[in-house]
Image (cartoon, rainbow, N blue to C red):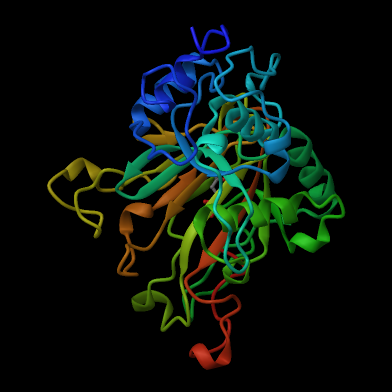
Length: 357
Ligand SMILES: O=C(O)CCC(=O)C(=O)O
């Protein structure tokens, strides 16, 4: 029992060094992350979320906290009918309050442009080859719906990028979705601006490096063949910048199909080849077999990097959208460059990339 006769949450006990003392905010934090996550699970917060990256508490979280160490049932964080976080920000606040983390390790005074509190973004590292991270419950359902509503009347056939000299094919079948490019300010609900800021915070790539959102809708049978988000200078000519990271936010569930597939995932080298002959792509469109796929779930986001840390193209980032078998799929795609977008004249040229993939 803790000092006041109140039984302590196992999480809080660990934070206090296992002695049952209340946490000392100045004591070094000795809890390994794995233990922290396991104990957090005991406080019934994380539900089915696979892993946790800690980085936010909204300032309001501090006021809303249960006493650190108390293990009262947290507010329900999963919408029961949908089994997803009803509100990612409420999830973050409740996690921080119930865990005692903010009390044990109060946020430090931020620097210029920093945030006053912690940010909590659950994440699952899906792959290193290429680097792919799942962000479950990244966007709440209401904001997903608002983005769909803001874009629905503006959709037109999606385009693809052409190599210099290649003829534009208005009947191309490589990408059969409809879509629209939207600046965040074009969404009157503010949901796109919220999403844009959250993507920037998580990737640590500034908003100024991102293209406009490409909101896409796939109906049954529609797909996007495997492609790269980068523009290989050998095929497309010299580029002033490249898409470094892509964040695909799923705005709807899909009854069947519609997965984002990475056809060279796991290939041992960044050229996409290597020892595994099976890794070679023979079928650019198909999604059969046990290739690595990310299932669309409303509100989840998947972040992947198309460039290696040395900014060379990682061919393993080749990806596509499997045909929707049943239902409808909506996504908001954000491409983020290693230079500001559009690239400034001083950075070596005009905007010859972007607009379509
Ligand atoms: O819809 C998807 O899952 C992938 C979309 C995509 O790869 C793209 O638009 O570049």
